[in-house]
Amino acid sequence: MSDDSFMVSSVYKPKLNYRIYLLIRDSKEALELTEQINAFGYQVNPFTKADDLVSALRWSLPNAILVFVDGKKLTFEDYEELALKLKKQSNHLPLVIISTGDNFDLRLRAVRAGGSAFFIHPVDISSLIGSLDEFANPTPSVPNRILIIDDVLSQASFYAMHLEKVGMQTRIVTDPRQMIQPMIEFNPDLILLDMYLPECNGIELARMIRQMENFVSVPIVFLSAETDRERQLAALMMGADDFLIKPVKPEHLIASVTSRIERYRKLRSLMIYDGLTNLLNHSTIKERLVKELLRSERDKQPLSFAMIDLDHFKNVNDRYGHSAGDRVLKSLARMLKQRLRRTDLIGRYGGEEFSIIFPNTTAAEAASVMDKLRESFAHIHHLSSDGFFSVTFSCGIASFPEYKTAVAISNAADKALYQAKESGRNRISVI
Image (cartoon, rainbow, N blue to C red; front, side, top):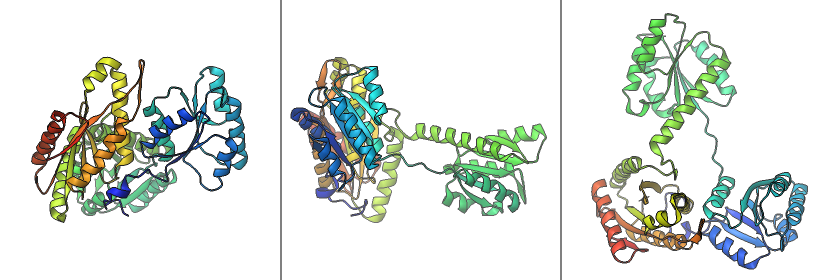
């Protein structure tokens, strides 16, 4: 089944490729941990004996091994023995420890035995899932893409060679008249631009690039033999980010390009994503809703839009503190990212409100999915200084083609959310 298809019966089962082996001898704690981790889409296999866990590795490798050290039923010696067996098998698997004790010596022993993460019992489930997410689905490194516009092919090739040596991707354009299509196809993270080109100069070209909506903020670095300071300043005032004088040393070029791209990506991330949850922010999710509705209309496919609001969230902040409230928001964000499809777009609409765009999905299908998520989230135990507590959410859903514009579908989903709240909260309403 592709990511673009929608099968309610299969998409939201635990991800069998996201598997956790749990070594634990306390049956009550085993049940509690298994239920909490399963709610985020993992499959947990509990073991009471290290030998059984090691034997299971011959048949299937998990994404991580979680060890619950209570000091009595399972000690640090047991953990160290397991770590030694894993080393002999050459299984470089992340080892995550949950310990009822906490001091420098225990943490040092955990590290020396190969521990990847250390949590204190009772564990904050949001923090634990955050670590498991990193082990199960590490963020892939994305190569920097550099577009080089220079009419001298030998020079452009020289710079491209050195940039590619450090893992960057490059594309060369020697005729500025032919730059637009490569820019759109390559979507560069940075543009290296010669100051003097046939039929136009680099300043004019930079002004053209800045007038293209998709490339307004892409860094532009001039490469030129121009030494006149006033001309260099004029180039920078036209929207360039740096001016390098030819011949430039490869290490200087690499350092300048890398720093500019890192800054560009950070700024772009701040513009698109919510800082707390790392979901799409309010303005971005609204923009994507407009685009997805146009796509649905063109392809004659359904689309559903869901609005979520955490129930009595003000009471959570007042009673348990804003830091606990933030952990609740991050827990819900993680669950949504884990359990929904890659094609579903998730955003933080504001405060304790979230929104989801479900492409190729009817209202009934979206409601079925959200109801399963609602039930799972209600069973999550959030940690505070006063102990554990649970939170629920309400959800309103509207769909295309019943509502054809972004304003109409968002207003309808908001109205459905209000109905769910008025009907007693912790429920789904479709309008």
